[in-house]
Image (cartoon, rainbow, N blue to C red; front, top):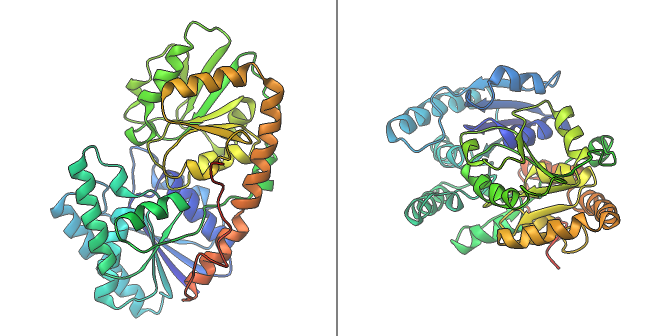
Length: 375
């Protein structure tokens, strides 16, 4: 199989996702057509993460995240030339589009080139990310238009699929997955003298750093508590509470070590696809306290491996409960690992993607192992 991946936003969770596809489908040929977010991670650094895999890389120079018609037309014509050349060379059996910009432009290009085996994974519904109702409305229109070009929409979680179906777009779910045995090799008892609450990811509006800061600020006078944000980003100025430490971007091994040594993983995200950072926290046997949002809610079974919250006051109450029940956290951590391994295992994920790449029709029933829901 010759699989072409297209990603204008080749950073963060999308890199993790594509890398997992390449590593877990080693008998297939993978060509990655990508943009670059140099302000996040330079491509030369990302390429090193792929090591000795057989993946080939093609730069998509015109690709950029924001909607700018002139640049988007340039990105369209550049991608058209790339895919036309690859098709002529017999290098395309399936095209997998990652994120919303690639999904829209890529499906339009594939329609023109009569490439029929097209898969689109949003990695977070774009019409949930807008800063206003109007921008979300625009994204909904674009997603509906994109659906008219064809292709199979594959969501990362049942809650994301539900959002697509609400706006009249058919979709299926293939849960994100990770290799739990590999990640769990980093697990360790929390070693901090203080009660550590950790999160990981880019500091942007979607991750709601203002909410994270609001929760941390309540504990400023409690010397026993500390908050850790692993990552960096344009909204880090919102993290003003004195008990928050921002690490910047770190190697994967160091990220795993820091999460392992923390007591609780906290996510304040406004929405997700199905976050790899939280999956890794499950594998590392961490209790998780997550906003009741798309993508997050699929990872929690209430009172077993963690809790969901809607307001900062609820999160504060839960953290105080966790602090006063250390033995309970150990049990919750074991549930995290068990549920994660059962429902978000990488083998199940990529068996289903392989099925799609081969041109087969995929239904939820009979293939999808249900994600956790809040009980």
